Image (cartoon, rainbow, N blue to C red; front, side):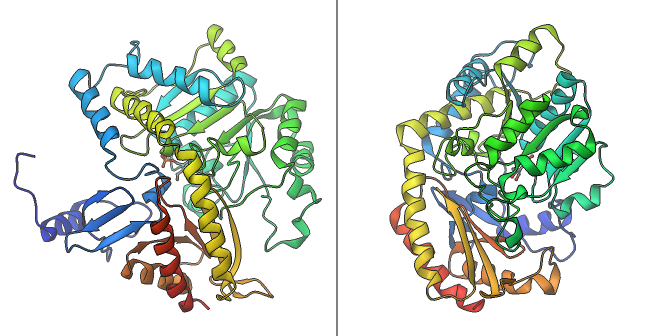
Length: 442
Ligand code: PLP
């Protein structure tokens, strides 16, 4: 930088005055100013260090400032920072080819965006064009992004403020049985297909273009489906010619201990949406990867979508480097191995902390559902709690931060999603801090 670096106070003052922060009333915000980051840690201007047990927004999968990733971006910047998406460019072409190789089944061509919402947005529009139908089935406990279409198919309360949203969105329930025992194994909702089938009968199955879902629900509670769920949803989609969209923006690229979450169940979507872990968030990037059949359809039909920054060379080069690092450093295996260490540690904490109601996770994609009472499963804070009502969860999160562990919570579920490069002693440190701060919820 040419200008002299700012002091902490200068950063904070300008931030408060001029930066609009996501999902917040701006008055009274007091964001901590961050001076730097390395690996799984970041630090503020006063030298306080924090273990990033969130991977920021579950995107810093390879940790901060990975030297090979930084070098790849620098190298691409020295070669070609930008060329319009109407040209062929090496990093873009290589990344699309690589995705065709590593994504499941016959997924083939990719359209690149600047993030997850834009990729979902394009998937919805493409599904409508391919099928000539308009309706979309989405789920309640979901988040698909903040643009018009993506927030409309989102279920969580952030959607309420964007309503009525795009037309034709129909919702189904989620395979979340912890607080709804009648939706357990064998029930229509838990098995997926029968529940979808019932909804389709009311909606006219041949008016439905797409079903969009997160194979493993992220922000809305870390929900893992049962063995048959995705397969039975797939079968119903096939029966009626409905396009199945898997949103793996959060769960993709090793987060769950498999390269893609849907690989756990061997089910392939027609459209796979990725972002975040695709390049560890070093440069904004999302991708929509479509089946061979849709790729074929696109040979004779126009793709009605485009972005100035579709397939930005810096983003594509960083994704190529990121995928190479994942292979070289055996990142998916580390996610699985450290996930087992974390899971075992959490199970042990549950023997001492009455507030732990449910532990859900695989790889490094864990949710800790906190309760007031294990018998009744009354949540520590109610669904959609804000302000004072959310305070019991926020106390735990805040105490973690004071002890050097960056945590976050959505209602009564604490999300534990460290970088996939995390090491044994860092997992152990997190478990020690959790052991201390969970006493505030017990
Ligand atoms: N889909 C899922 C599952 C997400 O978790 C997110 C963001 O958290 C998005 C989509 C939106 O992605 P972005 O914020 O990059 O637009």
